Length: 80
Image (cartoon, rainbow, N blue to C red; front, side, top):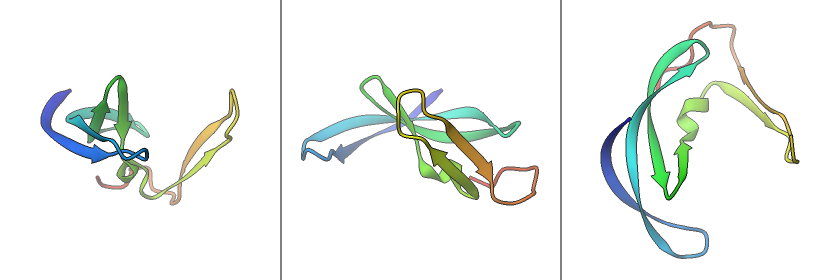
């Protein structure tokens, strides 16, 4: 990953935190994609843009299933 910049965000509890943003390559549906990754403490977050053109289903429970399904029959993921 390559660090690109540092930003600030206000968290839900009102505190202001600095975070770093990196460029990383991920394998998305068999295709490599470069995406921004925000890092806050020991947590790495990938934005919703990666999920554009997909249906996301999350079962919110211990051991719950996360399913990401493309909305079209295209073999290529949507552009970043």
